[in-house]
Amino acid sequence: MKPVVIEEYVELGLVRFVSRHFPFLGPESTRAAEAAECASEQSGFEEYSDLLLANQQGHRNAGGFADAKLVALARFSGLDDGEFESCLLGGKYVANVERDLADAGELGVHGTPSVFINGEFISPPDVETVRAALDRALAALGQTSGAN
Image: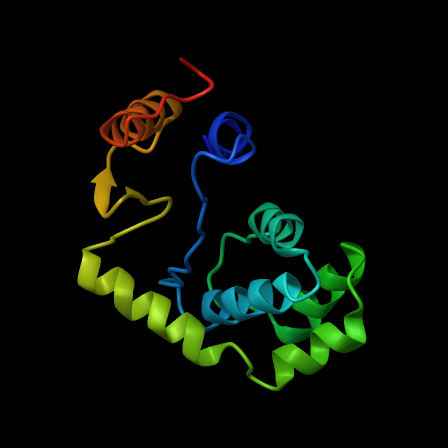
C-alpha cells in the first residue's frame, strides 16, 4: 500500500505520508523505533525501516534488535555508524517514541499497520481502501488525485 500512496499522492504533492511508531512488542521494538529516528537524521528512515522489517525475528526481545545489531544494520544501509551509534546510545529519541506509543494508545491502535487519514481510522489498510479514503479527502478539498 505504501508505495502506491507515495507514487500516486505524495510524489504529486497531494498528501503527506507520516510514519509514527507503535513499539508494542517490548524493549527491543522500542529500541528499533529509536534507531529508525536516528537513521532519519541521515535521510535513511525508509531504507532503515525496511531493513528492520526484513530482519525481524520470531522471538521477541531475544537479541534480534540489540544495540549492536541496530548499529550493524545502520552500517549495512550506508549510514555513518558512528553518528548513528552516538544518537542511539544517547537516547535522543526516547521521548518521541514514548509519545508515539502513548498517542497510539489514545487513538485505540492495536496493531500495525494502522492507517489514519485526517484523523479517520482506515480499515482494512489495503491499497483500494486507502486510495478511496484519500480520494474522498481530496474531493472534500475540491482536488482530485493522479489516480482519477
